[in-house]
Image (cartoon, rainbow, N blue to C red):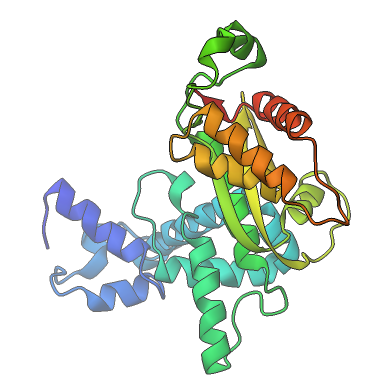
Length: 286
């Protein structure tokens, strides 16, 4: 049995994270001393060495479970405690944590839900959230709010800062998305569901429908909302380094392309409306 601290830590980690418990982990070890785990973990008349190690294994799992519940409150609400527990168990088996911080343990939950949804369609096995096909999008939005909250900081362009820029420089001004901002492509309208859960209101299952969701941060507050098509296209070109003049031209074109029944929008009024919202939401830097 290795005695170096690093080797000892690795050994205990393997036991604590063994999918079916410490007993399974011990059975897989090939270099145990003759006295077994008792040479490393002291047991007594109350608890054996394996039972003591099992306590740490359970603590490890339940700490991760608590972290997932904290980061995915709406997914938890939709599934309920028991189903969420089962979801976390299956997820952590396929995506065990690889980072020291528990903040990263839920990074791939949305992917896991999407993968198992596809598996269910082909294999006809029950998958997590079978009765809530929007669950992968919901978990993706919840994960995005965590990442945006923890994301990189930068000075956001404010209304005062915009007014301080000489008007003749506006056409060539490049509005860059704040580095913490995310834009999600979703197939379900999950933003209202998440907001209802966060506000403690009754929630309704998400309706089907493709949407783009903007997730941003205003100081320490995370904001999210569905984007109108005209707004999404303007933000999308801003991601490529377009100038303010380019964005204005695109908005003018889109405002005039609405169908006859809806009527064309005033491009100047539309630009002013969108710019005011963007500056308020702090989504741009220069």
